[in-house]
Amino acid sequence: MKTLLALEDGRTFDCRSFTGPGETSGEIVFNTSMTGYQEVLTDPSYKGQMVTMTYPLIGNYGVNPEDTESDRIQVSAFIVREYQHFPSNFRASATLEDYLKKQGIMGIEELDTRALTRHIRNAGAMRAFISTEDLDPVSLVKRAGEIPSMVGQDLARQVTTSVPYYWTDGKPVPCDASVSDKMIWKHRGKKHAVVAFDFGIKYNILRCLESAGCEIIVVPASTGADTIKAMSPDGIFLSNGPGDPEPVTYAVETIQSLLGYCPMFGICLGHQILGLALGGKTFKLKFGHRGANQPVKNLLTGKIEITSQNHGFAVDRDSLDKKDFEITHINLNDNTLEGFRHRKYPVFAVQYHPEASPGPHDANYLFDEFTNLMK
Ligand SMILES: NC(=O)CC[C@H](N)C(=O)O
Image (cartoon, rainbow, N blue to C red):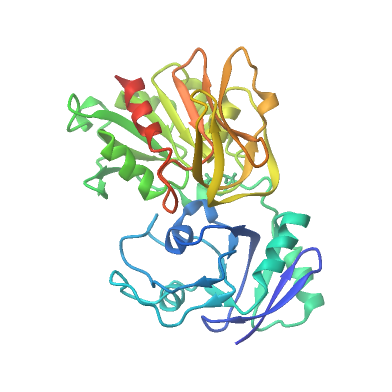
């Protein structure tokens, strides 16, 4: 079906919807992972964004019920060079086309995704509109410019869980939120009791925490410090999530009042929120880091890790006071901050995704560092 993709700066692409008619909008970004499209689609950090894959052939291994990072597709549209209509894989239970259609998410193909990616790299991530109905470039460019900008948006609020839950044996299990004392921990002593703030948490982070020996209760993003203290956890985890970290002031304040209470570990949005709580500043990158091949240097060991990433904002490394912070990781593509630890508080964080999904497992050691800190 004939479709138009329009960017706010006036660039348009003729393309084809492989999921039927529709209209959608969002910030347009690119991801350089060669595989892992189902994990990308279901990562809540992509809320409000349309993702274009730089790998040219997508859909060839279908979808399955296991490779999900949340309970639904989170992207607002999925853009590929060529959609493969006939998947072949022993794990596949459906096609990508049916998966997208069932959840009302548009899939777009037959456009020059290399030209689109080069444009985003030169001009930056920007607002975009896709339509099968409004094929007038002038009108669609105007509509792209009218959607809210990513800067200033608290999207964690939209994807966080509304009630606390346990993550047990690889799945969410309801938790009696009214019981707010040590009695809620069922395996205390055998396992590390961890409260995980859900700003848009990926399931594989919970799987990794569980395999590292943690018993986990996931709580809504707006949970207050008193509720956390009533649970008396051994450690606090701050998750990844969508949007701009700066407007998530309620979480920044909560974390500020919990500093020094117990060990904390943050990933991606959690890294940014921790950076803000400790007095740092965040800023928007031009086009962000999204893919499974980002080189990061661990400054403590001198080793290079190939990492999975998905972020558009970053903590400004110059905003961190060197007497309080140790910079532990940097990105070798652009030298931006990828990780820090605090000299006084038992707190550390990384901007990238040690849980991978999709991507390499080079940084899985960080989950053990968190459990060691809790010992
Ligand atoms: N994966 C994440 O947690 C992303 C964090 C934040 N939304 C950003 O784009 O930078």
